[in-house]
Amino acid sequence: MALEEQLVERLIELNYKISFAESCTGGLCCGTLVNVTNASKVLDMSFVTYANEAKIQLLGVKADTILANGVVSEEVACEMAQGVARTADCQVGVGITGVAGPGGGTEKKPVGMVCFGFFVNGKTYTYTKQFGEIGRNQVRKSSVEFVFETLLELL
Image (cartoon, rainbow, N blue to C red; front, side):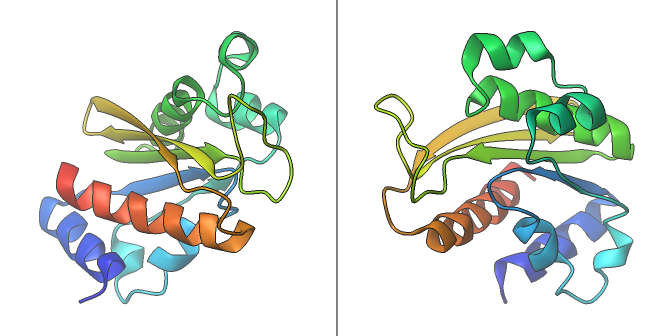
């Protein structure tokens, strides 16, 4: 059974709703989840917040957090996850922000670096993955896989 199918099944078992706040993945997590039958039982809304202003306005990410840590940071991913869970009134929120490439990387935040925030029923978890320069779309796909695998572990 595919990861996204396992995740929908697990969320239904727990009677949890999920929402995504996606930047570099551009809706790919949400799009992958809705490929699954019964996704409507666990998903009401999600957001693609590519611009900093969208993260601030729609998710409640603090401008100071972005200024202090940069938009690609665990701190911002955490606030994205908490904010999307609050906005969507759900038990599970996921925030994703990163540098998919091929440009935009720096020495401290290279291409292929993605930060993740998970809000699961009141608890928050953050991770940073270095996928490397594997190509923009592969960074996005690898990020989605990481999200689903991690959620299955956390739930």
